[in-house]
Image (cartoon, rainbow, N blue to C red; front, side):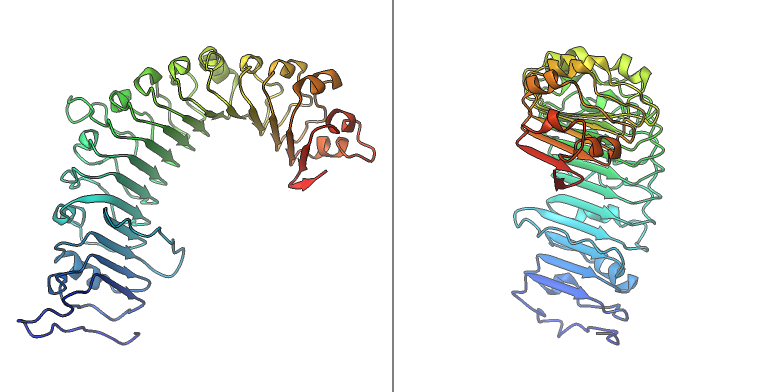
Length: 404
């Protein structure tokens, strides 16, 4: 409704829609006024999106009452379709709103049982302070809020119900604080997943944050180029199943350790690896893990060999090697990986040779995938490839997403 400017209240003694539960307003660029949510006594979900006036957003935020879900989405570009709101959880989703009231987050206190908060592409959000009332919060996602500073909720470490925490594309965050809530013990006992992605300013993660994370299953740090310190003792996270640290080039000495104490570990992703990070990494702990199955290892452009410690991971069933730019041949000690069933080779431009025929027969691979390894790919062709005899008995062979 391109020209609609006002939706007036009905008679004061009347509810506008007494049983209305869900209201969606979309692409009404002139609309600035609607009846207050209090005039919709049964309203549970309100969604405002696509080319709507910021004054409409402000007016709605001033009068939030008993909504369980409020979604605010910005312009037409880069729209993200969110999953349907779980009926049993109260939810706030803000996506692409360039202008919001400065006290917007403080108004979250008006949500009676707020459990999900998703903030996406809101450049005017500079702080998450004001969310301290969200004691029931289970899920917090902050994505592409480029001006968000190091001002997280005052008592984030006290969010006992928090299960999922993700902060992505927030380059001005430089740390998560040195002590949880002025020295109080962290109570993140329900946290199951934490992902920190593309936070260029982040330099450290306090290990105190994880001291009570006995439920943590997934930990991922991706593309945080200035992260230098994360000396986490993994005995604090005994339930960890998946561990990922990738594209954190400066994290070479103070790294997590204690993999051998994890009884549920299934997948590890690390790299790019340098000579320094290889020496400091807890390979012995990985080797002693009886549950580890999948390893994803990223190299560097000038890496000429694989870490020899890799050969001791004899229990793994899947190995992915990526971006080893200078390696020319895979070593024969890969034959020590007696349980290996899948081997993925990706973007190794100079790689030409697999291990020897005897080693490849000993491995008994079920799946081999070669992607963007042009020299090796040519040598593995059935017509004239010199490496073909090494892989001809592998049941599933894929090269650049095509069968050999």
